[in-house]
Structures are given as structure tokens and as C-alpha cells.
Length: 222
Image 1 (cartoon, rainbow, N blue to C red):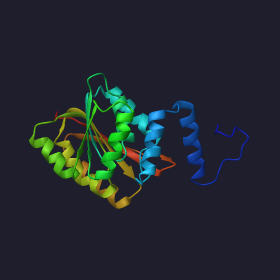
Image 2: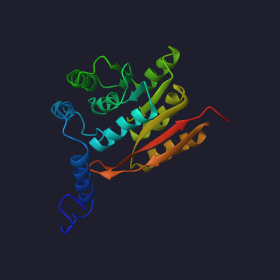
Image 3: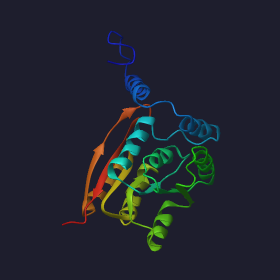
Image 4: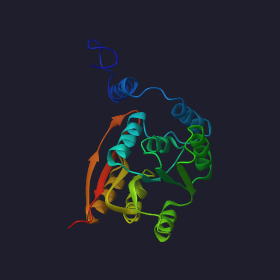
């Protein structure tokens, strides 16, 4: 039953998915001052409206908890909305390193994360993702228990092998996947070439259009 009741005429086209997403969110995800302010501040600063949805954020947070992750790597901070969700899934003492290439995005995210009282949990690093991932590897800062990659559909495939090098046996890698065929094919091909990785695509339809995740688990066993 949708938000309008059993007898209501469902909206046409994509509107029905937006209505369903709004209904599910209103039932399962309470309003949150810090998260709401993060979206508002990001919009005021002119950041693109491409954050994960509340449902997707809760999904990420639950994945952190389910996997028992203590060390999380995020590639693509934007305004810090997904970062906050990830951080809230961590146990005491858990940490997140979040990589962002845009100065303004990083500045806005730092303010949002401080407002959420998570500045001691989140370390935002500024620079191109490929360079920062290489630096993390060279400095021996891995492995990470959970890695979330959400930059753009074309570059996700190039970043995956670098992130894979920062994973361990049992690490979970989540990759944002929009409905861009060329980028998705490159990502799936990269996953197919990578030994010791089991992956599945989880598609969602809602206010962000068609946008889901690819979820992979790393296994070093033959």
C-alpha cells in the first residue's frame, strides 16, 4: 500500500517510485537535524544534488554495522551526507578516511561533519582520488574493512583496482552505480578481471532516478 492509501490512484511513471521512496523513508527513517542540515548547506553552497538518498544512506550505515567494519574508506565526499551515514554505523573507535577532489566540497563537508559531532571520526583528504589511493597504499594505511566508491560512473571502473589493493580478505567494496551503460560495462569488466572478488548489482529506483550499488566481497582464498 502506497502513501496515499490502498484506494488511491498510483502516480504515473517515475513519480510512483519517488512516492514509494518518500513513504518508506517517512516510515523507517526519522527526520535527523544533522543530515537535513547537511543537505540544506550543500544546496546553499551550490553543490550538485547527487548525494545518496536517505534510504541508501541507511543501507550504507547498516552495511558498516553488519560487516563489523572499523576502518572505512570513502572515495567521493561531496557534502558529507554519505560520510555521516557511514560514520554512524561504526563502533566506538572506528575511523573513516574520505577522499574529495573539490576544495569547496571538502570545505562544506568538514562543516557538516563537525555539526554532526563526527570530526574526530572522519579524516577528509583533498586531491585526485587515484593519487590519494596510491598514497594510501604507499604509506601502508590499508587495509580497510569497507570501501565506498561514489565519484562518477566513468571513473569508478578505474578506481576499483586501486581500492581493491587497499582491501583484505573479507573486505566489502560498495560502488555507486547509476544508469549509464558505458560506465557500468567498464565497471563490470573490471570486476570480472579481478580475481578473488564476488560481486552483485543492487538496483534502486527513486527520487535519484535509477541509481543503485555494486557490492563486492574480497576473498583471498583460491
